[in-house]
Amino acid sequence: MFEIKGKVALVTGGASGIGLEIAKRLLEEGAEGVSIADINQEMGKKVCNELQKKFGTNKVIFLETDVSDKQSFEEAFFTTVETFNGIDILVNNAGILNDRNYEKEIDINFKGIVHGITLGIQKYILRYKTGSEGVILNTASIAGTQVYPVAPVYSAIKSAIVSLTMSFGDEIHYNRTKVRVVAVAPGLTTTNILPKFEMKSVCLDDEIGQIFEDQFHLHKIQPVEIVGENVMKIIKEKPSGTVWISEGGKDIVEYIPSIPTFKA
Image (cartoon, rainbow, N blue to C red; front, side):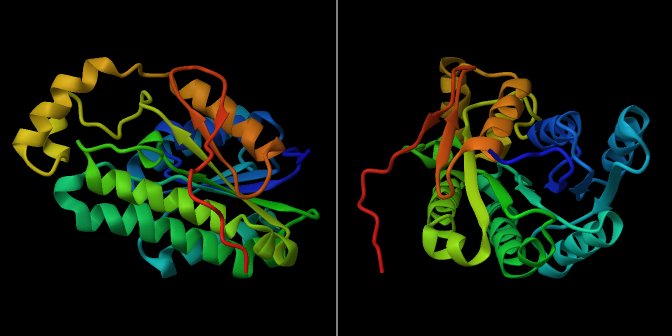
């Protein structure tokens, strides 16, 4: 089992929602240091101050970070290592839901994840992990494990994250890096990813947005605390290359794709 106590973590999108909950859980588990990386400077500084008061000023830092910009992301890695003398865990969580602005959605949700994984396994976690193993936890979505027509671009990006996790988590990569790559695929969760009462604004057009609103009541929304709890289990216990669905407050279930895995 991977021991979180004494480890150093970088959490993207850590100023709110799932990212913030994960940051709190890591600190409660005894993490040596947590960097909260987020584009929202005001909120990031606020939650950083709150966490410092609770866990200690030397335990938490805030880093204004644009994950879609590789240099900005690398600066977050560098500052984390410089501050805490290592890095063991990357929570690749930053993301938006906005099919209407799909170029920005792709930049943050897909490019950001790729930047994080490659920087982690090729350089920072590879070289600066404080123990024998590091972990990259990607936030995918249940929308990436099934057909999700009301948000097709978002769904496709999350499907790509599922594929990235399984590919980078394969033994070909793990055996040479000793960095586990895993993912959580949450169902609808109480975060600020959806603008209140403005679901139409994140869909490709108003017609699709209306369908989204009409279907929204069919989904069971889970509290963010459930996802945070499940993420701790995944980080500590689950094998590299696996993706775990966290939906409706139920126990996590491994996502098993129906397509065969290619082995070189």
